[in-house]
Length: 273
Ligand code: ATR
Image (cartoon, rainbow, N blue to C red; front, side):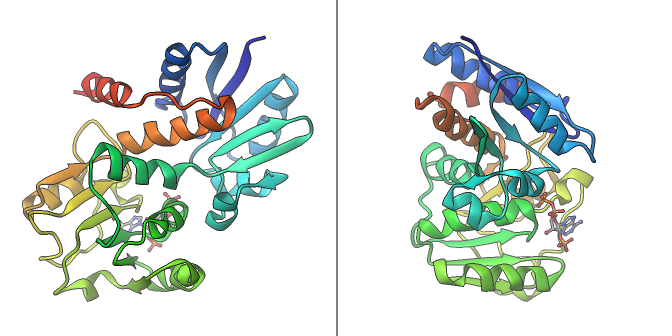
């Protein structure tokens, strides 16, 4: 029987997830379908339930529904519970398992694809919204020398710092208070790139060796990546590798098989070029 999966979000038409999962399915010989579903902003729960009742086996959840997905899950993996957000559902009878594969996808992209160890490195995470929250625990599990969270609204970074303090060395700072420091890895988890904006960063935080990573992807380099390059950073990455790796982690949860990802990342980069 063909198993059905979908990504649900709003907007959804530009999602690359169907393309990625169908490539995984061909590669691993899985009998499955994967579609994109647009849910009304006030209709997430009923769209998920309709898909389940039609025989759906699992879903990916994207902006802006990850927190609502967390509420809807009947069971949570530990990483989803701690993140407070869900990007993957697995449907089992009347249960809905909620997982969060975003952080694992980011860590795999940085450490394996970009060959940049996180252990003992200094990390700056920009942003304190849902995207940032989802990746903090997996980053801390790599035991960086320190993880600094900076956010335009400082108290949100402080709340995350308090919440994750038990899991590793984490501090909260305002952007301009970063003056005089530099970092091995700087990750943009703000939604500023969506509006072609950039948080107010002091000069000097990037070095030649800094990896600048924008969790967003777009055809043109984001303002963050352009700024990092101007500041001398030579290693620049957008979120396409993370997108494929989080998808691979969801696919593993559903199908029990880990697909190969490098060729798919390379093909997606080529088709955007
Ligand atoms: P997401 O789920 O994408 O994380 P979110 O929860 O709305 O979305 O969070 C957006 C993040 O981007 C926040 O950290 C926000 O900063 P504030 O908490 O101060 O609002 C950050 N952000 C968005 N636009 C920004 C901008 N122009 N400059 C700096 N930070 C910005």
